[in-house]
Length: 415
Image (tube, rainbow, N blue to C red; front, side, top):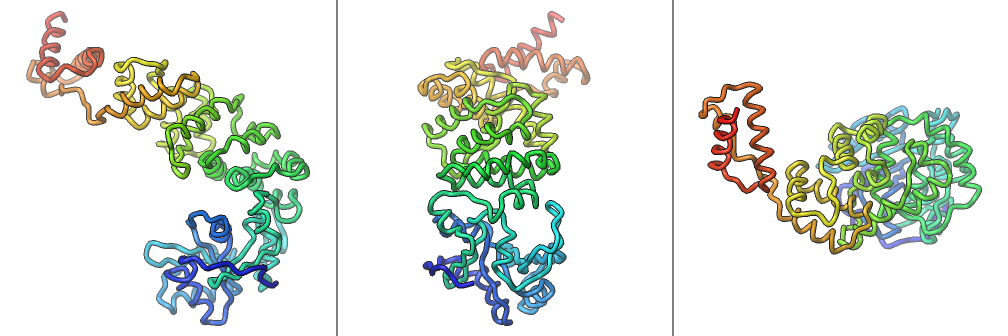
């Protein structure tokens, strides 16, 4: 296979730890190229994150070469040909070229090969099937470069075959459509996806969670999600009836307020797709194996303790901040504004109040203060603290410690 073109090498290709790893392999006579996302994003002029390397050297030899060069090597998946090289804080996944001998869904029997085209044929999408040398020689056996330039998202070879190899590729297709697509998918691909939808049920919750949140973090996931709704994909992930209007409103508000396109809040966007039911959000998070923190936050966003009706009073917004913290209060107001379709002015006024909130605000009364008043530790003390806190909140957090102690005495006097 000959290179299709030569591009100007970027710094990450020619210097630093990535080049060091490649040169260790090359010095021993092995061929090594960059593959996958780092190639795609270089061609798309986007920031390169993970750097993956493919080589015709077998994994045991890769391990030996790295160790001999003093580079930390981790045998992360020798049976699949994968070794991880670690230099400082950077990790590089190095995979030996492979061809499929027999496939069983995601699990395949592979044989190592020296055929770069056979290895590229195993990849999911044409834009992910390119390889690149440090000198900038681009190898592109399936037209990924042209597809990337045109915004076409296309499976390598037959869509149905690629999907059956790993049903997660259905979700990956729509994620990459959201990230790089500018052209509607062809009808044959969408028909193949519809025919294989049942395979999504076999995927683990962790893998579903990862793909769903990555999709929600795309600059504008709405067009891809609309296709997922139309072709029955989203119903396999979110069993509740889903409408996109709230999400589209959230995206519009993000743009209006200058949310950085590479820093969207995927959980806020996901919450915009869900009904206001805490139990439903918890169930979804459990099925998709969200972390406890993610699960609780999703439930909070979907069904907050205070749902502001915008325009809301400053006092109401401060109660929201106290109950949830400033960051989540901002997100809850954004969702409320999207659902209520309020003006930008009303949302701006609410956000100004929230930005002024101090998350260190605490009830200026402690159990020790009540002990000094003769209140014994236990349920009675807890009830009294709660009553004083409710009063303090109703007074818009203004009473100081002396006022709270005086209120405690008053409540004790009336029993």
